[in-house]
Picture 1 (cartoon, one colour):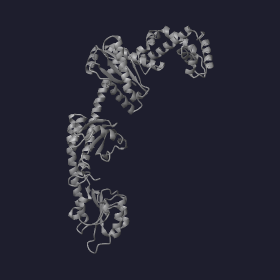
Picture 2: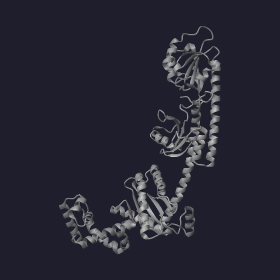
Picture 3: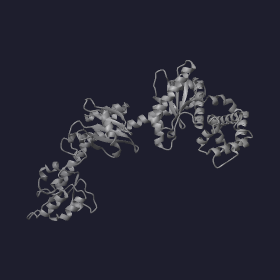
Picture 4: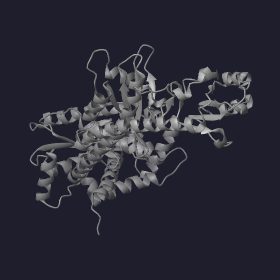
Length: 561
């Protein structure tokens, strides 16, 4: 479909044949190929200048009528020539062109016999002048469009302002979509006839089939409007799509031509604004991430640095806070898409249950998302209820994005920056213990009270020696059907129920009895005894807690230079 200006000239710099043939010099007799009269031309070449391998898209070939043959016409049509202008001999009768006309009809290639004054020099000059005039006209219009949108970009007014400017130039509705097809801004949807959400939803199914090159035209549905869709590409990455909705049905060809120019420049400058905003947002997220990492690790040079950075982020150094740690396999970065997902999850977590008096700060730290949440000061019960409620909201909000392996653990509340660091440490301890014990997907440090009670024992040399002595005697005995420690722990967790423990481990009852007997011999104590079970249970908990806190100690200890 040709896109034309008011003067009948194609906006891509090509001249419609209908416009050319209206010129007095080119009024001649159509010999054949009427079906191709809707084509457009950009240049004229004599047949003598046409190479055997040249592509002829948009080229009008000027040639003597005497050399026309069905084979020549078919060959030129195959190379996508726009039209053939035949010039008769200066003297003598016109040749018989009936066979040439039939070949032109078959190929859909217009063949015109021009008058004696339409030599190549005159025809070539005419086509060139009109093509250059059109190119100048398109360039002038493109410059005006670019200047208008560049002024909006220079002001840094944002994507909504850019959408309003593009809508003003196109005199119609405009949508700006991100790379996932989500609406970022829209403008010009003043009447009830068009709904931006409905258009975005309908386009979402068709965007994947569109490429990243050029402006595409789509009819949303048989009775719907036509839209122009320009890809917003920055540095080879698809940032989104710019959508111009045509108000007329069917749209005017002149309007379509102008709107394509607006769409091309609008997509380029909208991409620049998107890049600028991404850079600003990335800088803000880095600053927020650095502050959160400094808070949870307690890494401030002095109180003055803490206060200065706290003011910037709105952190009340006298407030009371609890830390939540979000982890899932999908947060482990393996490529750029995973890093973008982590950034998106962080922004979503930041917006969970916004409140004027509940300060929240979320950031990605290593392979976790850390959320610091201010809590109301009051009795411990209400504080714990607030922590549990917010953790459940995090899990409910992020679950659809991160899958069933999502875990949210929380530390106990604390005051100021020191309280944040202590709460984070407990949330990380709870995270490590939850993996080892199969705890609920949402749990807090208080939910693992036994480990909290054993914390000092697990840190002592006596406690670790006790756990090592008990467990090593079981770990030294190996078998093909599982280690004895696993068998004994399953037996203790089932409250001494032999059959239940066997089902848990998928072992035969007799095999289970045999392994328990081996465990008793290794321990030199009867595993059926309550005292023996308590000793193994205690050793196992001390060992688990020591492993988790040991790994965290290495992480939290600053490197020695």
